[in-house]
Length: 361
Ligand code: F6P
Image (cartoon, rainbow, N blue to C red; front, top):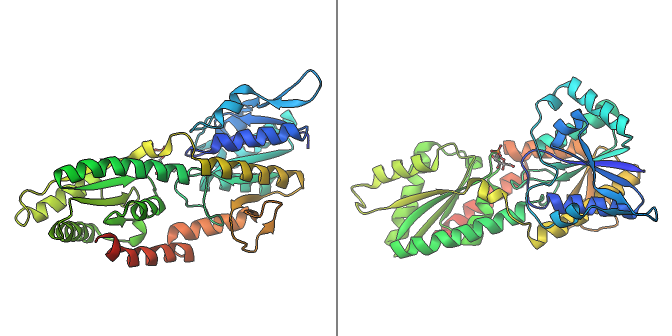
């Protein structure tokens, strides 16, 4: 291969730039030009490409300074988008034309469910050589233990909750903190455990508004009865009742019982998605980048590189923590993660159920 493309699509995540840098460096080292596609699939359709490698006077390749520096930064230097045009057959055909025009022999897609679905469609409909890298803070992608950005997002949440806990203890207050995670409550669950929060509320638990209010009231009642100074409940964005509504309904319910009760709500929102990638996200990004480039060069296509530090039956690569899986299987497992039929989701719910009684102590 002499020329490949890389794009980032969907919600950005810390570590995307580190993966882009790794891909550019690996390309340069292998004598392969690497072009970045601006703003995801929209840029692919419009043919908006920029070279990330550059030729030295002696003919060897190196990487652009901006690419080098961006590796340690959050967001994505290529820009990202959720492309409605690419969801159409005509949009994908145009994207293929643009790839041919620039002479690209392969495409690496860094992103979440929608982005990987797009990559699969390009491979199936047009025979494009594609390799996916999981990038989403939500950790809702099948076949991989983690995706780029999850570790950084959790560090951000833990730091924010530490700050909130300081002020909560000072005033003996209950806090409801909302974290991102539209379809998957992993960030809420994992951060609740790390914070020894009183509870995690996740969409997957399938609780009604009434149950949620009863649960939050019960946690607050028991916590303060035990003499706690901080009550911390972490709610995933996917839980349909908003933080402010949940606070209002709980305060109304407990008004007579605890007249001085003060519950505060904090929605962390996009704060959780930005920031410089953690060591772990940078390291995983580099190794998944390597797996993706090696995969393409070896002739593999329509696959995703996954971070799986344990052996689990995937196609082995020279990195024992990186395995490749067919995108079709990845997308199937992603659907199951989200609709709750995946054993992974079921296990997470069981574990959280068991942890609930301990966390609230
Ligand atoms: O990247 C995934 C995600 O962060 C979800 O957790 C969240 O619901 C969504 O993206 C927010 O998207 P947007 O940036 O379009 O508001």
